[in-house]
Each structure stands twice: as structure tokens, then as C-alpha cells.
Length: 124
Image (tube, rainbow, N blue to C red; front, side, top):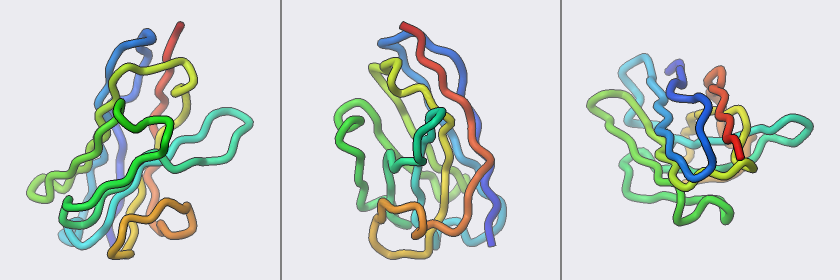
């Protein structure tokens, strides 16, 4: 089973960019679909983006389409979330997660391995 560690969060001004990374331990990373979720204070955790084990399929939440991209490098056991044109409403703790599902899935119960999260704060 893999373990996940996120990095790359921080404070950025509105309109800026950040790239989050999710480093996985273990030798089976390439067999997991990966997802990024976020949780703002007082709100439920929500799906942001997902990518299949091969990287061939991706999905995005409507409010990040065209601004965020998701990718993975199976040789480096790492998944990425590149965020552009950040808005204050993107402020949240961002989590990466892994699933055995073959298709890209958007619900939290479908993911059984989670990282500890990284804070992203977008100032106006």
C-alpha cells in the first residue's frame, strides 16, 4: 500500500499560480488512480481533479476547469496539481488521494489512501 505526502502549498496572490506535488512511497503507485480534493473551513471535502493510473484520463470540477491541470510521473511516483489564475475561493487544505478504481472517480469514498494535506491560501 502506498503512503502519500503533499507539498507545494503556500500563500499566493489572486491571479497567481502554484504547483502541488503528491509523492508516493512504495512500488505500486502506477497501479492507482489519483485524485486531488480540497476542504475549506466549515465546508465538506470536495473533488478538484482526478487522473487515471496511466494518465490517459482526467476529470476536473467545474469551477477549476481551464485553470487547473493534473498530471503524474509514474517513474517518480509523483502526482501534480498545477493551479493557475488562483482565486480567493480556492483557499483550502488540498489533499491527494489514491484509488484502485480503473476509471477516474470523483467521490471521497472511492479513495482509500489519503495524504495529510497542504494549505493553499489565496489573498485578494
